[in-house]
Length: 549
Image 1 (cartoon, rainbow, N blue to C red):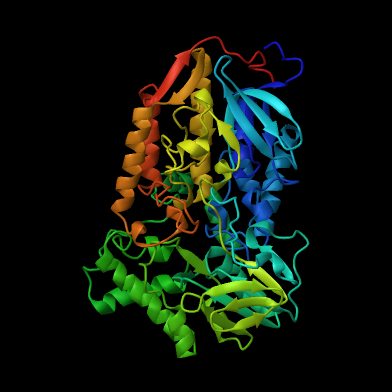
Image 2 (tube, helix red, strand yellow):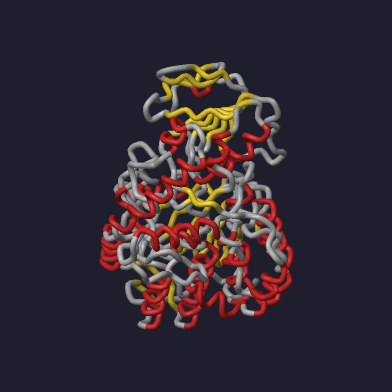
């Protein structure tokens, strides 16, 4: 290019320094020898675990599976301390990964990419940041996560509140002192369910503003037996292979038994055992049809309702907490520690905002139709503009200047959740249309990163200049994603899987519900057939720096 002396030219720009961005950087730099620049909005690595530092934040996958598997020595040397990895420990782990593989030298922190425009004449992406950086790259790769754009509802008077207000997805790094404070938390999704029991132990009084009651299973979180972890480490290859070919990316043996094939006593015994063991075994290890058959699901849903009524002492509060408007697992399955028990505390009040909606936020607190609650702190546990929100906040333009936001106005369109027609040499790690949030994320991330880097290596060996999803293949995949979702119970709930938490967002099921195993089979098939569904065009590689670190 004529302006090469002014505009740094790279093989790739990668967005985000979480699990996806770190591994993409490692693969492209160390295995492909490419020049890579990672841009990260935070001042450190970690992705979602950099931002989500709210009380009680942790992952729902067990520790030994919430990590990378690409380096066997890394797997052996890291020691997890709990059954589930808590946010500080995950962040410590990802910092260890960044240091161990010397990844920071290719990451620019405190920098947001504001624009990425495709240059058809030169087969390059022009990328700009909020710090004034302007670079060109042959490949533009997003590792921005599925839940990274926090959503705070546009409640009247929101900016008038005189106390402190926080969103769980952008928590102060120094923490928040709730001691003796009157706290209101809006939202009882995953972050709310985790934060509420912890905040309740500190606050003078906690008011929980609940719109939708949740099904949630006990996590049975605690320290993990070292003998168990030593055994895992001796069988890690076998365990990970099982996870890679499972539906959810976890080494869980799925039950093939129907909930309708046993009597009430036998069924309850199965549920009781899973309830005591805790975690996702209740979903995957009890009966094979509770996620797809409404009659079978009703048995699981009713069991959880009975547990809520059993745990919560006040019958009126218990009934407010009982979910009745959607089946179990049609929203994100949740696991908790002392969530329902928390409502037995004298300093906790449940406010049902479905029947008494929030009218406004006042300088002194929150006003519902029935009452005004004076507060010192408001916590917005109100979730994210999932899957597409962060993409829509970046000015991404493909062929002919088409904006990705405009193309996705009626719902995201992507082939395999990896690439979108009209946007050559742009790849998405766990994008919409892939298992992503319906799986153990590191398993899906590794699969995406490895598949993408294999494609880039394949292209370089064949002097392929552009890689682009075929529009017809993309349309077929999007239709397939929707068909699979319709065969499940997911459409029966208003969830962020469908964008239902964002006013005006099209109701389209965004992740792939067919399972990690079937998705992996499809990706292998596509690659083995010469990357069917992609248009690969030969030509002289533009980036002169190819092969240079």
